[in-house]
Structure formats: C-alpha cells, structure tokens
Amino acid sequence: MRPAAQLDRRDGPEAAAGSQAAASASRSRAEQRFAFLPDSDLVDAVVASPNHGERRGGRTPDLLLLHYTGMPAGRGLTMAERAIRWLCASESEVSCHYVVDEHGTVTQLVPEARRAWHAGAGSWAGETDINSVSIGIEIAHPGHPWDLARAPDAAPGEPAPEHPGYLPFPEAQVAAVAALSRDIVSRHGIRPERVLAHSDIAPSRKRDPGEGFPWARLAAQGVGLVVEPAQIAGGRFFTLGDAGRPVEALQVMLGLLGYGIAATGTFDQATADVVTAFQRHWRPARVDGVADASTMTTLHRLLGRIAPADGQGGLA
Image (cartoon, rainbow, N blue to C red; front, side, top):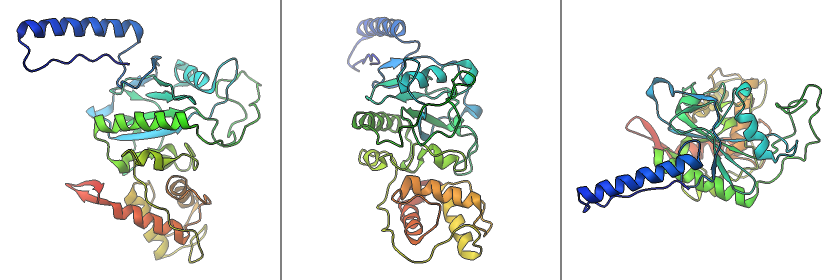
C-alpha cells in the first residue's frame, strides 16, 4: 500500500517539520519496496516497465480503458506473470498502467502520469491518441480463442496451447478491477461514458475484454455507463450491404456515442465491426454485428443518458 502522511492544519512549524521528515522517511521506505511510488493504495506490487513516454500535448487522463491479456499461462508462469513479463520487455513495445490477476492482485507497471503503450491505433470521440488521454488496466484472462498461431513471447515454431474457451471472470478479479477503476475515476474525474473497452476504441482489431465482462458490476460502484439492454425480438434490422438514410442515422448515433465511424449511409464491414463492439459492451446477449431493433433501442437509451454540459458529455 502507498504510505500517506497527513498534516493537520493546526500543526505548527515544528510539527510540520517533523511530519515532513516522517513523510520523507516513509517515501524512502516505499521507494526501497517499489520501483516507483504507486498511484493507488490498492496496488499490491510495482514492476516497472520501460515502455512508456510523456503524455503528448500536456494532456491528462480522462478515459479509462479495460483490456484482457489474452495470453496463456506457461513456462512456469501464471497468466498474469507471463503477461507482466511481456509488458515489461523492451522488445514488446507494449505496456499498461495496471495488471489485475485472477485472484485480484493488482500490479502497477507504469505511473499514471506517463503515457503507457496499451491502446494502439484507435479513436474515441474524435481523439486518435488514446494513449495520451487514458489509463489502461489489463485483466489477466485467456480471452477469446487465440487469434495468433502462438503467444507473442513464444519461441520460433512454438505453437499456442489449446485454448480453454472464453471463461467467466473470477469474482475476486472483478471485485479488484471494480475497486481500482473506482479509485482511478474518482481521482481523475473520469466521466462514466469514458470508461471503455479496448474493443470500443479499436472495433476492427480488438474484442477485449469481451461480452462476458460484467460492466454492470462496475456501474453499481459508479464506474462506467450502462443501461438495461432492450429485449431481443423481431423487427427491422440492418446488416452488411444495406444502404440508405436509416443506416446513415445509425452511423451518426454511434458516432455521437464516441465510435470512430463515418456516416456514409452504407452498412459496410467497418459499420458491422462498430455494431459488434457496441453489442459486446452494451447488448451482450447476442453479438453478431447486426443492427437489430434491440441494438438500436439500447443505443437510443445510452444516448439519452448522455447530455451536453458546458460542451462536454455528461449524464442526463
């Protein structure tokens, strides 16, 4: 845990000097224990990654991005240990601010003030440098069936192990992610509609943390934005190849939420990818990329919860 020294306003100069000395000694002890001082009292360990830089343009975090690691256990390491080793390897050129293992242990790899390399190419609400405005949490999890023939840190020719399937997130892990997320959004004033999945900012590339992640558990603690998904039923729907003003209106609404989508009026593959990402996060009962009535009603409900406030999005 990060040590904290408090100075009561009634303390005089001598007491202040003593408190400052105690705080300095406490920081020194913490620095001996940690590679750097953790930003959250919920951190159990610090393992410093070299993969980070300055946040560009003097920006500060106003977005929280959740990922899964999507790496197997192996080589005598747990999923989290193997992911941390990769995220701390200079040759990987990737990192994140936090990793939460399946037991709820929180490890910090990059100070929040720094620009970790976790988001990759993507956009949200017109912002394309997601790394400069976000804090990234990696959740140790095997993810969906492997996209790659082998793990990113595997030796040449080493095949990926058999995938266990897209598993439920353990209770202890979800509780830790929720608590850490609540701490981060509270300290940085991150709005609920800017707590996102990796798949939201990169819908054509990413699927994490996936349709099985319990976003409602975070929302119950004031983290993120959820609405009751509309019931799946019949009715009009849009899919690949459809075109016209209703498709354009759908694309405009997805763009208003934040997705990087052009209002072309044609339901192309990019639109299907965005609809799929939307469903993973906000209508997970059926993830198929088809804009059915349930998907569109749920989208309307979300937009109804977000109202402009001084030029910024805010909950209505």
